[in-house]
Length: 215
Figure 1 (cartoon, rainbow, N blue to C red):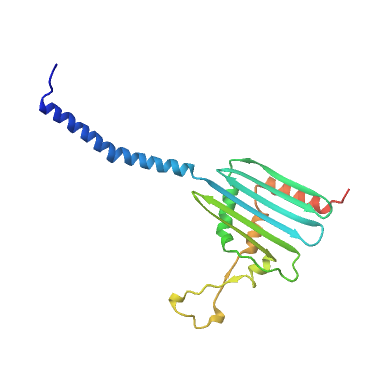
Figure 2: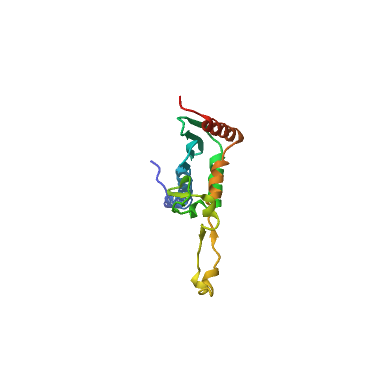
């Protein structure tokens, strides 16, 4: 049997150590980055938005807009119910499209997360409930707000005041400018949502519900 010389053994040991160190330094780093990519790809992603409007007087009793995007699959529905026993639902088939994700981005840009509940107005005839939920990565946020008269709360009645005391106390608190909250804009976002075919079907359903009579 051939005996290995001390130099040959030292070379083999040296190569084994270098291979081990190389794997630890580079292999583990690459595996760590790859694991991070896999985790990001598997992270849940979901968007939900809903607006329910209830009316005190005929002809329409209730309207509902409902949208969602779960893992890139979007679907959206409109439903209207009249006081005269008519209920119509318009539903778009689920599919990979960007309507809901773009819509959610617009809600975010228009200030959906800044809206707060508002007390009913004395002459209110329509009652709004808006709900949004976002799940991104492993974090989530959601909000439900109720209000009436979105035009009023978006103008004279809906200002939000923030005072930064780090800059000193304002000399005249009476004239501090407020930020308008976009209740009316958010409602308009829901009402103008969707491709043209969907909006045309919604308009048709609204006309049919207003003209319906009980059988």
